[in-house]
Image (cartoon, rainbow, N blue to C red):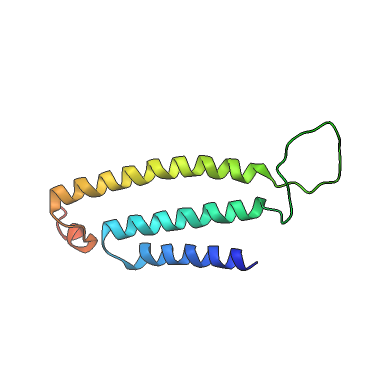
Length: 112
């Protein structure tokens, strides 16, 4: 249970970074922290204490297995998250080249 609380705390730290910070790079880092917290929560949902890898054998026994589905989904989410993070950083770099600032408040004033 303590691991879920720590993962939620990690998510809240990322949410703080997205909502409070005005620097685009810090906002992207906050999004990354939130993404990794969600991945951690998914992995924790599939974990079973004392469980073994779900490998099929000839004998059927009442062994406790770890659920592999959340782990597979997290692997896919990591790849997608990496792509979206790279895209967000490339947008931030292009915005910096155009406006010479990462501050969101200054970028909004330069609309036109």
